[in-house]
Every structure is written in C-alpha cells, then in structure tokens.
Image 1 (tube, rainbow, N blue to C red):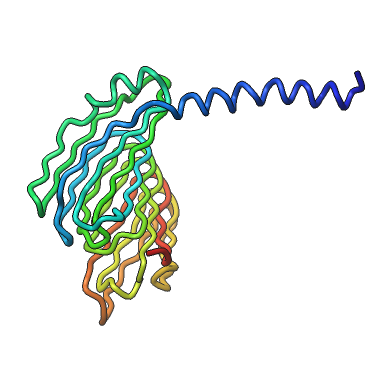
Image 2 (spheres, rainbow, N blue to C red; image 1 turned 135 degrees about the vertical axis):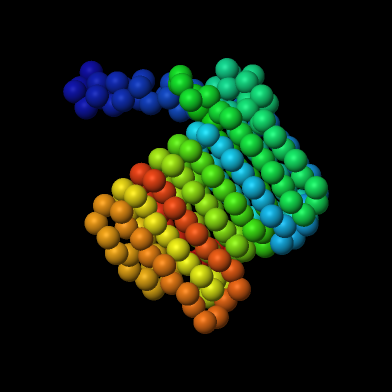
Length: 211
C-alpha cells in the first residue's frame, strides 16, 4: 500500500466513527414545550449555562421551547432542566437549569413571535437572537451575545456594553469607546423600541439583516 493510500485509510478510519457517532447522537428526541402566545408579548428567560438561540416562530401566535440532546444521559435528564415554563398568553416566564459540570452536549432553541419583547439572562454560554423585533434587554455573564435585527431603524434607544471584550454596533453605525470595558449608547429620533445588550466577559455584536 502506498504512503498516500495508507494516509487516506487512516484519515477515513478516524472520520467515519466521528460522523457516524454524531449522526447517531442527533437521533435523540428533543424535549419540547409549547403554548399559545400573543404577538408583542413579553418573554422572560433565565438560564444558567449552555448555548441558547432565540428565533421567530413560523406561526406568530405560539411560543416553543426546544432542548435537543445529543447524548443519552442528556436525553434522560433534559426534561428536569425546565424549572419553569409559565405562559399566560401575553407574558411568558421560562427558567432553565442545565448541568454545570461533566461532558454534556445539547442545544436550546426558543421560538417566539417575530414581534416580541425579550428579557433574557444567561449566566455562562453563548446567546444568539435572530429575526425578532421588539424591546430587548439581554445579558450574558460569561460568553458571547450576538443579535441580528430585521430593521435597525426600528430602535429608538441602543445601549451595548462589555466589561472585558469587544462591542460591534455597526448595525446602528456606532463605534464603541473604552479599553477593556467597551460600551456604546445612543438615542435616535426615529424608531419605537429599546435595545440593551450586555456581557460581563465576552463579545457583544448586533448586525442588521434577516426577517
């Protein structure tokens, strides 16, 4: 066997189990909580750790929480991570407590109406908000906070800050100030909503685009 063929065989043997393992892991049934929810309602989310995505629902009158485990132990334990899921039609309060220690693999996605007010707090992890318009107050203790707004002109007041990290506010044509603790704050003449994004240690960014 030539050196090239041997190298290819070694790479293939290493790759196939990884791909097969990931494909198998994705077969675990997600944990889903869903309720009717009014457009322009208030969504409050508190989570301790993990990567959390907030996205718009295709149907505008529902709210859906999806935890997708990629390991058997997480699939078994995930339903107990939902400490609170209280939805009264125009206000939702969700509390999640995921495991802080050990080797875990899961995704958390919260689907909300495109027009929603968000109050989000994540202690450790990455928080991503896409395609949702409304008053937004989001904070991450340690990790990155990224937001994509459909229309940057919809916001009247913008405040973005980090204690240690970087701020990208180009969606609003703003440049942050500061050295370790960067921040930017601006009031606009147009727009209806308020935006406040903060991270203790990590990066904060907001870009325009998407629907």
